Amino acid sequence: MKGYTKPLLLIFLVLLADQVLKIWIKTNMFLGQEFKILGDWFIIHFTENNGMAFGLEFGGEFGKLALSLFRVIAVAGIGYGLHYMIKRKYHRGLILNVALIFSGALGNIIDSVFYGVIFKYETLFHGRVVDMLYFPILKGVFPSWLPIWGGEQFEFFRPVFNIADTAISVGVIMILIFQKRYFKEEVKDEVGINNETVED
Image (tube, rainbow, N blue to C red; front, side, top):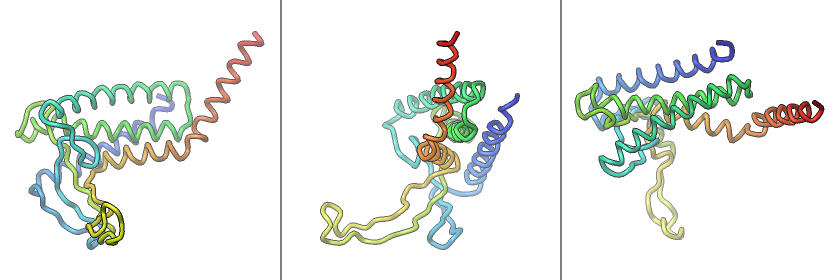
């Protein structure tokens, strides 16, 4: 179990926070209900989506089923990759960020696969992902001289999302930011192994 403790603990904590909040929202609020946490900047807004992260959709009943199945396959792949990285002793930061991505993907899979059955509104693999975190930090109107969007209202940040989406986003962003640090050691290790092979 050496090397597995921190990634597994991180996965458990993200899943626990994600599912506890989603179930509380689902059992204590009605669809579309919201309440303010930090004025107009941070709002809990109960919404559901049939599709991907941040409320993006993927067409119809077949699309919903296909997306749920794709998520299951993708999470299995990420899980195998995480196991491989731990076994090969990849950079700890990379392992923890992949664990974040895995936990976020698994959190949304639980919704899309099981929530329809648990909450008795759909069949297996046809559940809806629960979203609630809404940060409309900045609202305004585009200047009239701006091409295409001139005079239209804008809002930042518009999507409503959940803890699982946040875990995925943080994991991906951290890997992009620190990729040189994460993968530098792997390149060195491979060079060392190749040199040993040549010497033998």
